[in-house]
Image (cartoon, rainbow, N blue to C red; front, side):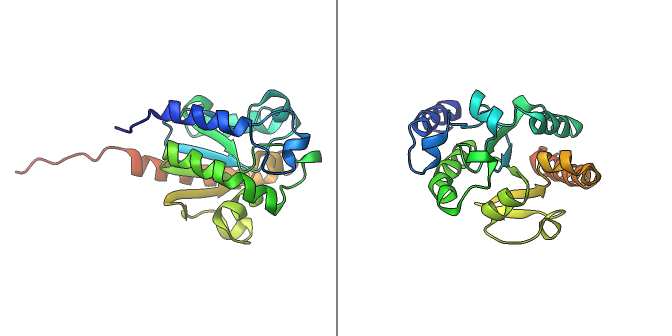
Length: 199
């Protein structure tokens, strides 16, 4: 048992992030998009940063790309409510530009704290920016997809960002292969091991 229940610890962290002014994104945001989902989830999904709809609602992935993400998760047997969804940066970069290095550096401790509290078994990284940032590399999507990678001791999988899939529907097949691989791995490491009785 943990000293502080996961939901309570995550709630306290959220209240802290709402006051964050560590980088320039605090000047232009409407709200902090902390993330949402099951605090006890074994799967965390991480994107790049909030867009306009997310900035307006305070919820991650609520626009067209969010609807597609919900369908992708459902296709491998997960509802949004049973995973935890968040982004590298908690505030919207103006005009949806990529987060700057100093903005990412300022926000990374919040993300690491989320991961430490939730303690997932698997992380799904959406898009090159999220993957390069988390995995601290400059590899292409092709070099990162289709394999198990590690961050903070957690198994990570990389696939296309839903927004990219909306622009390039021909990538959806590759995404389907990626998330099937994730589901297979997830089941292997989370299913209880059956004990065989001694004969």
